[in-house]
Amino acid sequence: MTAIHSISWGDTLSQIAQRYGTSVDALMDANSQIKDADLIYAGDSLKIPGATGSQGGAGAGGGPGGATGVEGVKGGGPVSGNNAAAIAEQFIGRNAGELKHSDELPMQSWVPNNVNCANFVSACLQKAGLIDAGQASASVDQLANNLKGDGWQTVSLANASPGDVVLMQRDGQSHVVLFAGFENGQPKFIGSNNVNADGSQRISWGGASGNYEIITPPR
Image (cartoon, rainbow, N blue to C red; front, side, top):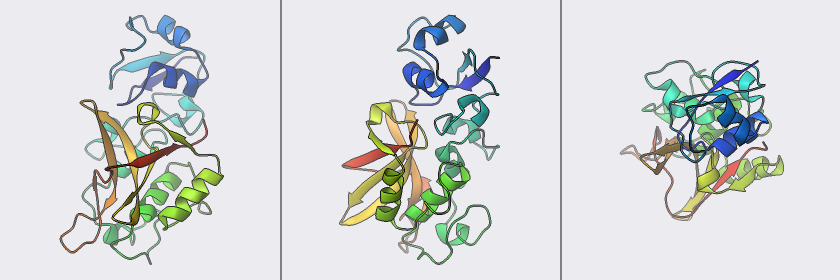
């Protein structure tokens, strides 16, 4: 059976082939519209030969990497697949202090309103099925240790996939957001950031600058 994959910002044909256990040549053979393996477009659909499932769903990907793009959930639509960044985008504009008391994400309610970044990222990863409650943490450093201990590995920006975790140190403090793909050639990030006037956090775009490390789940 042939599955359908919706191309996300930042996807490459080789990444998609690896994700679905196929080859670049097989993808090109199944998609005659692709003339150049290095030239694919976000929003287009790819036929995945030999795969099962539906467009961008977890059944199509068969693992943590089988994620759909952030573009698929604009306007509060349903999340497809297990892309933590797509899940995070549904909460853009929400204050972390309010969100942690809702039942929409498995966030810990005791976390102070100005340090919810790891709390939010952990919850999105849990919602995406990438980690369980035992791996989640409201501490950036502990979350990083938990993920790396479970096989998450550093990946270059060029090879990152939407939903990968972005770790950084800024002003002597640890911070974490999610990679959300590329737009107009520039990387996009999303997370719980200190953007409110009182220093509390709100779910917003951005949050990564300077030197940062991107880690990706085992594929």
